[in-house]
Length: 497
Image (cartoon, rainbow, N blue to C red; front, side, top):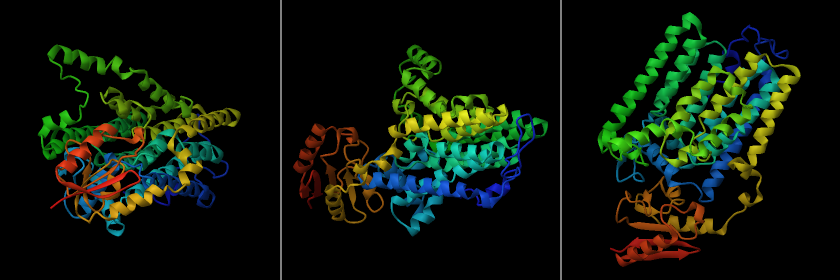
C-alpha cells in the first residue's frame, strides 16, 4: 500500500461549479503546491505523534497478543514466503481462515529490512497520517485554507483515530487512505477515480466489500447518467467480493470450514438457541438491537458530534453504514463502544461528509467559522479521554525499571523456541519465537518456556485472573517446569528435559 502521491494537489480536480461553488481565494481554485506546505507538515507531525504513541504503549508492555501479536506473526509468515499462520490463534492456524486480508503481504518487504514488531506500528502511523492530505486538499479547494487547517487537524486528532492508533495494529489502517482518496474524488466529481480508489478495499478485509458497494451506489446517485453504469458495476464488484470472501475463500482456509468460520465469529451465540428463540433473537438483533444497549447510541452520537451532525446532510455519510450496521448488529459487546480500533473507518467518512455538507450548504464567512469553531471545540473536549492525550502526560515518559527486567528475562528465551506468555509479553516475543498466549485454551500445549507477568494491572489482565494464573503456574511446576528466573513479578519457567 502506497501513501497518496506527492502531487495530490495536482491530481484533484478544480472546484466544481454549483450553488455552493466558490474558489479558494488563496489558490485560484486549483491550489499552488508551494502554499500547501502546511498539509505535509501536519501529516508529518501526526505521523510522529501516532508512531510515538503506539511504540510507547508497546514499550511499556501494554500492547496485546490480540491483535499486535497475531499480525506480526502474519507479516513474518509472508516475509518467510508462505501463507500466514498464527500460533496465537492456535497451532499453525491459517489466518486467512479468520479474515481475508491479503493486503498485509505488502508489509513483508519492510519486515525484511526491519524484522521487528515495531515496523507494523510505524506502518500504521504512516498509513493513517497519509489519509490527511486528500481530506486537506479537498477541504482547501472547496472551503478555503483556514477551513482545511481546522478540519484536517480535527480529523487527525479525532477520538476514533486516537483509539485505533492507541490499540495495537490493525489491517484497517490500509483502508483509511484509500477511503479518503476515494471520497475526495467522489466529492469532486471524479467518479472513475473514486471507484478505482475504493475497489482495493476488498483486499483489506472481507467486510469492506459492502463499503465498496455503497461507494458504488453513491457514485450512481451523484454521478448522473454517465456514471450510473460505473456506480452499479462498482457496487456489484463490492458485493461479489464480499460474498466470495465470506462464503468461499475464508471458509476454505478455516480448519472448520464454513460452519467453523461462522461459529468462531458469533461469540454471543445469536440465533443458536433453537428455531423459535433463535429467530426472535436474530430479529431483535437487527431491529431494536441496533440501538440497544445505550452504549450503541452513545457511540453513534460521538461519531457524529465532531462534525456537529452536519455529516448527516451529505450522501457520503451513507458509506459509513456497513461498518456501523455490522458493529451494532454484532453480539460481541466490544464492537459497540468507542474503544479499540472499531471506529477507525467511520472517522474518514464523517469528516469527508462534513466537508461535502459545508460545501453543499454554501457555508462561508461567519457561518463557516461557527461550524469550524464547534468542530474544534468538540474535538478538543474529547481529546483528553482518548490515547493521544498520553503524549502530554509525564508519567508516560518515565522509564519503569521493570521493563529492563522483562527484557532481560525474554532475552534468555532462544530464538525459535516454543513459548507461552502473558498477553502484554506476547508481542515482544512474536517476532523471534513461536509464542502463544498463556491461559488461552487454543494455545500450543507444553511449550519449552513459560513467561508470566504476575503484577500486571487488573484492567490489563487477560485471559486468566490472578488466582487462576497462580494455580496454572503451580500446575506447570508440578508437570516438571523449573523456575529459570523470577524477579519483580515476572516468572520465567523452563521445561525440564
